[in-house]
Length: 221
Image 1 (cartoon, rainbow, N blue to C red):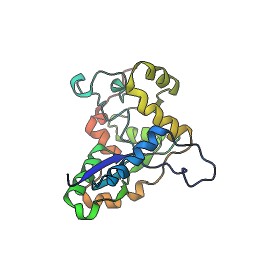
Image 2 (image 1 turned 120 degrees about the horizontal axis):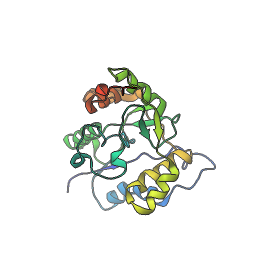
Image 3 (image 1 turned 180 degrees about the vertical axis):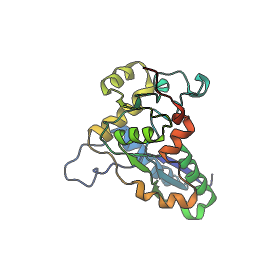
Image 4 (image 1 turned 90 degrees about the vertical axis):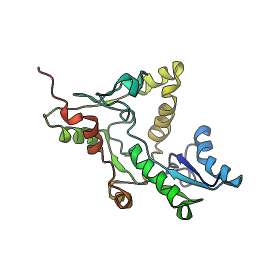
């Protein structure tokens, strides 16, 4: 095995920096330590710290079939008129990245091992709040369709986590990064210049267009 690439969420912005900070959850700390563990075994590892995907949206194109998007509760969450869902508070700025961008970086690491072997780096990303995502969706619409941000209730995620493992990760993620005030903020829209040198980044507008969101027409009242 010549090279391994790990995809891990970024370190939070307070652990080991602020004087008083909540203890990082064990499960999250282990994931952050995994790349160094492999290196200690003599394996060449490139660790990519990547932001959140378009969570609760990247599988839910309203034109997708059940076979494509699955049949779980969260896979049925769709962007539609007056509904654009997320797991974070609507005014919290979140770094977002499309899975295509992750794939491009992984491919680049494999193509240029002499540059990327045994380093950690953080992917640049766009950054937006839930309210800003709604504004982008309405701007992308061709028919004047309105959208509203609908937050997936944290209490409901806690209840669902008892019965299905599907929501355990986003629940923990939301609790730590959102409600424990540790959301990372290492990137912004201005930091995408390096990504653009490799390929045109997938903006949220392009993502919406690929899903067919511009063609959603307002329901007749």
